[in-house]
Image 1 (cartoon, rainbow, N blue to C red):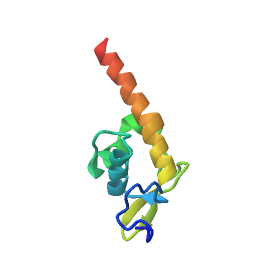
Image 2 (tube, one colour; image 1 turned 90 degrees about the vertical axis):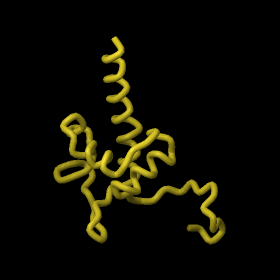
Image 3 (cartoon, rainbow, N blue to C red; image 1 turned 180 degrees about the horizontal axis):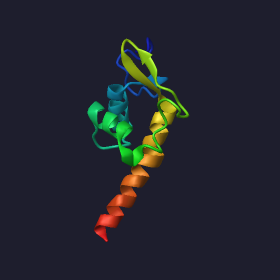
Image 4 (cartoon, rainbow, N blue to C red; image 1 turned 180 degrees about the vertical axis):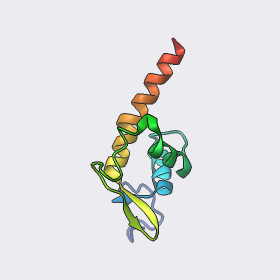
Length: 99
């Protein structure tokens, strides 16, 4: 919460890191996806379909962080994945099933 904006209205700053739960909420709030839960994000993170594209984990470009037992992911790469990879793969698969 910002002291000059106690109701957080119009807040545009992004957190430096997200968990699976806060990341899911941020994706919905930013309109990147219509709906997703922390379990949905975790499923995508461990899915074979996205394995080569998911940017976090051991031997990946961005390691997970940890705080209070929760895994943390840098916000920028997290959002980039969902904007650039997740939507494109999903859109391509939707076009294949429509054909």
